[in-house]
Amino acid sequence: MTAFRKSPASSAPSALSETDSERFAGAALPIRYFIRKVNTMEFRKIFDTIPEQFDRWRPRYCAELFAELIAYAEIGPGKTVLELGPGTGQATDPILHTGCEYCAIELGEHLTAAMLRKYGAFPNFSILNDDFITYDFGGKTFDVIYSAATIQWIPESIAFTKTFDLLKPGGTLAMMRTQGDYKTPNEALYDRIQEVYAAYFKPEAAYVYKQGGFPYANAPLYGFTGFEERRYYGKREFNAEEYVSFVGTHCDHIVLPEPYRSRFFDGLRKAVEDAGNRIVFLDTHLLDLAKKPL
Image (cartoon, rainbow, N blue to C red; front, side, top):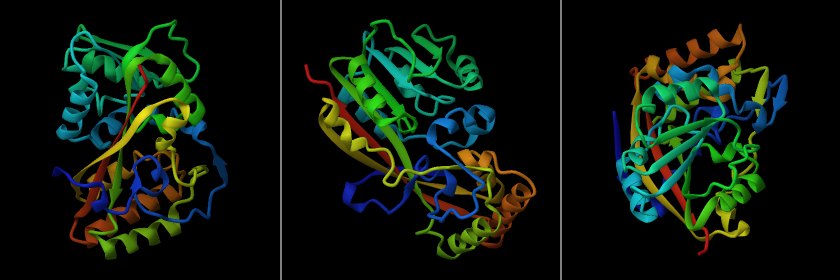
């Protein structure tokens, strides 16, 4: 079950984002056991190994967020829109269905194939299977560029400089992401899950989390104006099997080796089962907006 509401930013629960906390599945667990630490760039294609699971379990965004984005950026027929790293379309439908000229650029081959299966029949849909960092758009510009939990996988200077250059004057940069808090509604279960992480979460390659996460608010340093953040709230509930499937979509959880892998996921499953077979996430969906000056 998922529910959404919009609230003032000041009432947001404390949480980590789905991407900033990939290694924690929402929990602020210290990392002690990594054999090899890798940077963000090395993990960018890891989701391409699980396209079906990614499609089923990654969080979606609320209708109100999209309604406000579409109104703010005046997205519709005649407007050109670029989505960065759409995955399997977690944030694609509402934008595509405006009738805009929609284009996506997706690094993963299997994720690109999934997008083509879903949306290839739409006349206003196109997708590039390439790397945004190095791809040459050949002078093409866009009215809107948006990212749903993707832009943070791109180095800050490239992310902001290239999106700025690709936008038409007056164009919109929109960056959305989800913060999932499961400590507040499940205190005892949260502590039990931390014990499982401490015992068995020992990946060969660890996602190196940059303190503070991606600097979304730095957009004005690269020429953008009118930066603002909007927040929307919702709730997800999982049973034990669903929670294990969801956690399995986090980047360095995907590469967790045996014998730890089985013990880790079995431990998570048992923890949720013992807590009534239910775990609740209080979600904050963030939408950051900025404009390229006219």
